[in-house]
Image 1 (tube, rainbow, N blue to C red):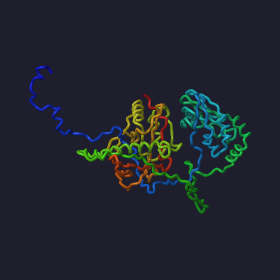
Image 2: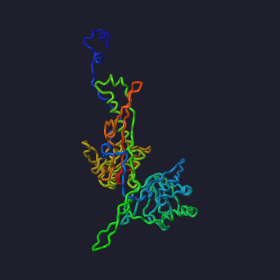
Image 3: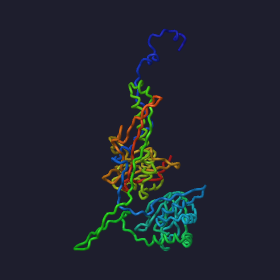
Image 4: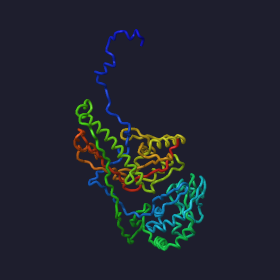
Length: 462
């Protein structure tokens, strides 16, 4: 502005002065951390009176289907002795000294992609523990060509039958390294030498060999004896359905905080928006975000830590492909939703683009969402991404009627604000601060193992 312009008299009220008397149009307080929270929306919530929910199942036989853990000192990797009881023949073996001696007999071997770890038709002379990497199993098809039998990776094992089966036992597939692999091997001779030295191990293995094979179905449940195809007056088998003698109980977990509001703020600054209500609204949003994170990541009941080993698969090549999603879906009946980190969905879209495949869309909760084979593929930023830039994709069958995954909560709480969430007034302090205890109670239960599947080690790429 020139000196002449500055000397001109002001003819109207300036905008700066006018704003002092004007009431601005304003938004409610905004919060960047709010996500779609699809898991909370899609789970059917079951009323959980008494704070606990018991899942009764048919009797299942434990077969040692966990994964092994390892310790590393620099490049030297060792199996943790107690973890060896995850091998089916060593289930319930409790002699720690022998387990330590057995762990010490494993030796480390490195393989490059394409290397053969075990060859079809050769004698099983080694127990193989996969400490790091991905291994493909290839069998022989009906006409002599190769057939894919799946993939194993970190914590899995091969050749455990060596511990109890006869020496002439042969490999029924070829195990080939798909990535750079670090494995631990136990040779048959080293194992036999330890058996000769250990009376407790020898007795345990003899008991395993002599143990009667319990009738069970393909899912490991106690078999129900039936007869079919008979005619006349044949004797029919008698049977009963046995129940798990120690069913799992899920106790409701809690996320809580104390909301504090200065009484002067609540008294004087409540127009046009109630300050306490806005504070409570944003606090509830944060609690719901934490709730969804716990439903996925909690080590006790979270979905990632409660997926059955047999329901966890690995990607064939690294990134999530349509083939991987197809295998994930076909392992269970009535899959209702796929849940993935937004970056995993982007990686899947890139793989679809490479194959000139266009994922479909479906309507979910009144909105259009991406889908695969008619199953919604929904984003969830609570699924973690590891330091190696890998993540997981979950598939869920939901609902009580379909023996699926269900959310647990209790409603009708004192001072309830939302279902399963309450805000209780705690009083006013000597500093004139009002306090409210805000709590939400929740858990999640997997009714049968195949209700939940996980695609693991999903590489996200760039």
